[in-house]
Every structure is written in structure tokens, then in C-alpha cells.
Length: 128
Image (cartoon, rainbow, N blue to C red):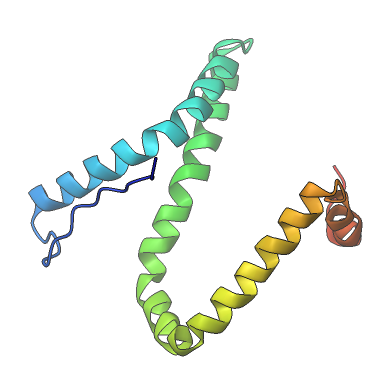
């Protein structure tokens, strides 16, 4: 059985508030399976805290971790598109290198030697 993918293709970008709401709803629908279990875990941890303040701190940290990257992306989107235009001619090389790295990581996992990456990176990783 072949895996199929369904996409909605439009020629226009949503420029109205209603269009932005619809795009946001579609994004939320697609993200729910990813974000739901994490949010449930944070809510469970917040519910077991000794005070409301501790639970609020957990939820604020979660919200900042989720929201700040989106805000940073919104602020830097023009710079991103400028950089993207410069590297567009290197797409094929990037695909080849990325594919090669995926094969190497797959082989390391398959042979049970994936921890070698942690050994290489250990001098650069912070100790907690």
C-alpha cells in the first residue's frame, strides 16, 4: 500500500484577517499531535506543584519556549529570504550532504555505534 499525501495548493496568499485565521487554524490542526502530549505533560507537572506560582512558572517557561522562536522568525523573515536567495544555487549540494549524513547516522544506529557522536561532541556539550 502506497503512502499518499494530500495538500491544498493555492495561487494566492491569504492577505485578509480571515485568511490569516484559516491558515492559523490549519497550522494548529497539523501541530496538535506534536504539541498535545508535551502540553499535557507540562500541565500534569504544573498540577502537581506545591503552589500555583510554581505551576505558573512552568507554563510561562513552556509558553516562552514555544512563542519566542515564532516571534524571532517573524522579525527575521526578510533576512531569511535574502539568505535563502543566496544559497538557492547550492540546494543540490546541500541535499547530497544532508542525505549522506542521514545515511551515516542510520548506519551508526543500525550498528549500535550511535553513541560515538556523543563522544565526539562531549567536549563541546555543557555539563548539568
